[in-house]
Length: 335
Image (cartoon, rainbow, N blue to C red):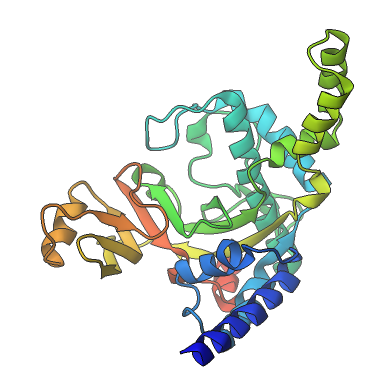
């Protein structure tokens, strides 16, 4: 038993080092849990299979990995600031309210994912795309996040022939969920996973010198002293330490048959859906309970998130997405 654990731990150490090298994030105590385990949780690789994980790094991660810099962040930050007041503060498909600062931060992260997709089309297919970051009615941009394109044979930008929607989540996100009304409007859906941390906007504003101005005013008004100012400044991450990158995880092509298919595991009482694709309709929990012969007390949870905040949406986990060069070429040909 001790020998097996040692071999497993050694393999996990090698896997962590390989991923660390690829994404340029230094190893730390929880690296395996925060980065490697999320790949397993999303169903992209069979757990504790070192050979397949290395193949995943070479064949799926690296061809779809884009490192972002301060200029990319500035573009996203400015574009989201221009459009944030034209967007409803409720989450798409729910009634949860976000204040404008939170919405600005979330939109900045989302726009970074779209910039990564723009880089992919330019680098891999020599296709230039314009992002839908201008102010306007939400209805005008529901279908496509890449409304205008310019291929090598085009004299100028023209309307995209297909509608592509881009969804961005954090690195630990393993699900793409698309509200039903939005699912009807697009042809393809792209999931991107971005490594920003939770204080990316704070770090950027620090880099831009905003907090220096605020702290100076605070010292002038005796709200804090210079020692407090240094302590507060130190708490905010440096932008250079963020390790800003985006993994363009994969593609989903809109389906006519959206019946929910899933896999999962049954615990002593509850059931966890580990992989799924399809439309999440009201009453889905009862249907799964009946199919899996669960008790009335049982809960149906989804890997890593528990319950979705709302229903009437299409869901798919990362492991079920298309990702090969051939898959991307299909989209490039249709654009």
